[in-house]
Length: 170
Image (cartoon, rainbow, N blue to C red; front, side, top):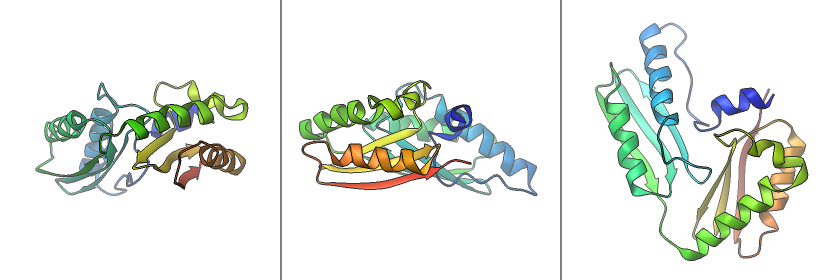
């Protein structure tokens, strides 16, 4: 199951291939490929997109401003994309949030029942930290894994709240 999670982990929402439109399906595939290939994307970034004809809307959160710019640039280069609406949020700089990110990574990916998720290059559990508030995004294999990740995140000292948006894969 983990091999299927790896393929969809970075772009966790808004990816629905157009069933009757091969051009839209091609744009979806190429946009996803370009975003996955961004060099500085990591477990603390969450990117998603929607395709509506020739307009691509980018959403999510990133820790580096250059990643927002790079995402827009690579999506604009895809054939068939006429307009890019870049709604990606750049998370504020904070040493407290950076400490939380490291602690959350260790708490989640270092836990025995969840460490199998640390194997893929593109991590299936995305950890978004903004002003001490944590959001978990991505896909896990079982409802138990979703609950364990939530419990581990809530157990990290300094976390104000945890929103668990993890989805259970099929």
